[in-house]
Image 1 (cartoon, rainbow, N blue to C red):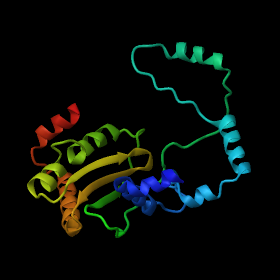
Image 2: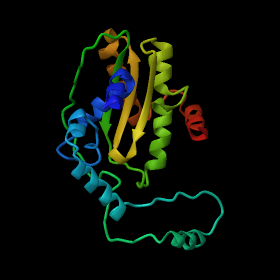
Image 3: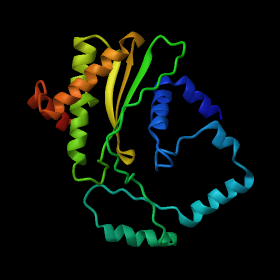
Image 4: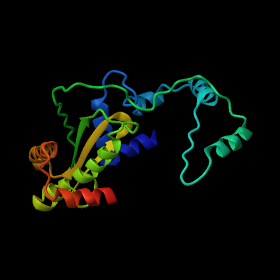
Length: 218
């Protein structure tokens, strides 16, 4: 509960969580795994026991390898742990494909010197999609690196943001733009972000070759 309270004081994280909460539809996985005081209050000794028992009976072990090695050798070594196998199927990525719908705007007023603007976009791309590498490069060009389009246009040229960046939540199929701004600039910053995104869809990208090279290197 103290950890949940601490999130409220971390305004960037709080705003991000609120965005994901507002973007959630029905019981969509994995947008529904946002922790709340209510979910903590509903925990009982019996439910906690059941939760851990399920983990022991059905959880997955994921091993990430890097370098030149024989995967069969690793699998053979893992047999010493006497792990069980099962037929349980788990989805690690949202398979939902959402059609376009009306943009929604939410505002929460707090006594702050710096407003937190978070814009969320639905995408069709997750990490196991063939377009994912290009998606990562796009995000870097758009707002993920120091000299990205958003940093150059919104922060350096227009001085309308203390910070601004884009990021990918691949398992949720969500693309985010987050900014720390003066609350008086919200509408103008949103217009700029959408305009630059439209420029990207049309291939009108300032310093495109230079930015592409830098994004790939990063």
